[in-house]
Image (cartoon, rainbow, N blue to C red; front, side, top):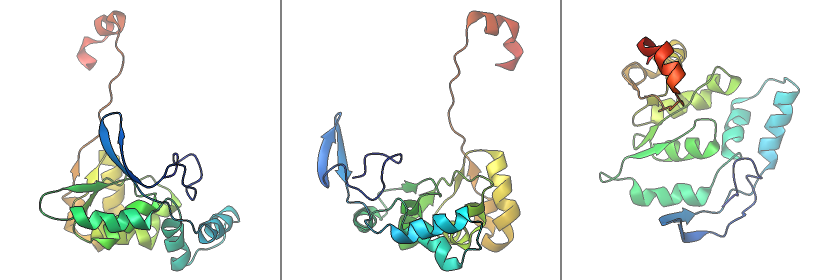
Length: 180
C-alpha cells in the first residue's frame, strides 16, 4: 500500500484491498510499520560499523515489506503458479522466498555491494526455487562468491537478460549495419 519505493515504505498511501487499476485486478497489502531496526542498521552502515547477522536480517525484515502480502502468497504457492520475486535488495523478496523455500523463483538483480555478501543473501539463494540472472556478469559474481556454498543451483541457473530497445535512426543503421 505504499505509494512507491521512493516514498515512505512504512506508510500506507493506498487502502488494503482488491482494486481494478487500468483494467488489471490489483491486490494491495498493508506495509510493515516497524521502522526503527532498519534505521539502526542504516545508521551503522553510515558510520561504517560492523554489522551482526541480526543487523543484516533487520535490514531486510524491516525495509520494504508486508507480512500480509507474504501470508497471502500461501494461496498461490502450488503447482498452478510459478511465482517470481525480485530484486534481492528489498525485504519483501527475502520474506517471501524464505517463508516458502523451494517454491518461489528469484531474479536477484545482484550488484557488487555490501548486502550482496551478507549471510541473508546466501540464505535467499539457498531457498529460491530457480534463479534467473540478468547478465553473465551477475551470474559470474554469484558463482564466484556463492557457488561452492550454494552449489549447482547457482551454476546451472540461466541468464535470461532484460529486453532493451534502443532508438535507431537511419543514419546509425547505414553507418553500422554489422553491429545490429
